[in-house]
Image 1 (cartoon, rainbow, N blue to C red):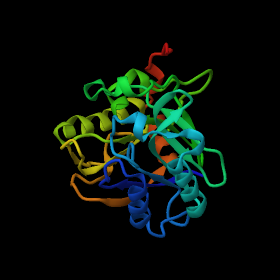
Image 2 (cartoon, one colour):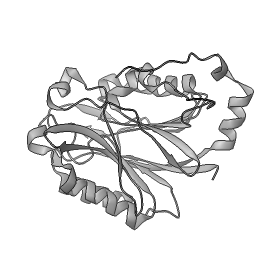
Image 3 (cartoon, rainbow, N blue to C red):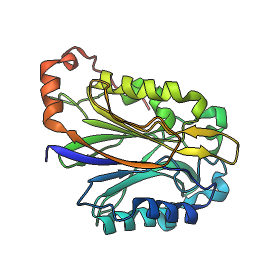
Image 4 (tube, rainbow, N blue to C red):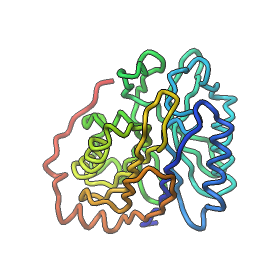
Length: 267
């Protein structure tokens, strides 16, 4: 229970075409499953691309074909599959990260920080709570794209006698190529300041708005050193292993957490 095999899925996306994207991802994933990995991480809005057409493209949460597809993939492959989806929940719309487990009910996190430069704050609702999930002895904080720029929201918030709230941070993204340097820098910064692993999965290709995406999907260790670093614009699968014992040893050797400020985020 001290190791977590994680697969980063960097891919191009078909604009506003969930059926084509799900088919493409099935082909890209092939027979990948629980014998090779514990966790498959897909990009933000992997079914549609980063669409602001929420009223037209968001699927009702209870009957979403894309959420059902995620659950089916988790069941069939015998591992967790996660990524974000545009969903309608009641009268509201969310950029929602789905954590689908084999045979279980999905857990979700609604993106907190909405990218106003694209008008996301006008088309989707703001998430109200942080979500930490557990897998094979690891606690993982779920985040989506623009969240990465806001360290207070992502900072470790242990409770009671806890030393740490989480061991790894997941960030799924549609982060454009012109801002690739902040993406890479912030992934490493979040790992260093939180003494945790950080997994960042971004898309590649060009969307219907002419935005280019460079990928740069990374898995960074607790010292900010990349374990997976693919600075190229091609689809790929990369699986790497997070080691909880190595993490614990470093936290003990370099106990910066003991000097961290305790605080509470007001939502």
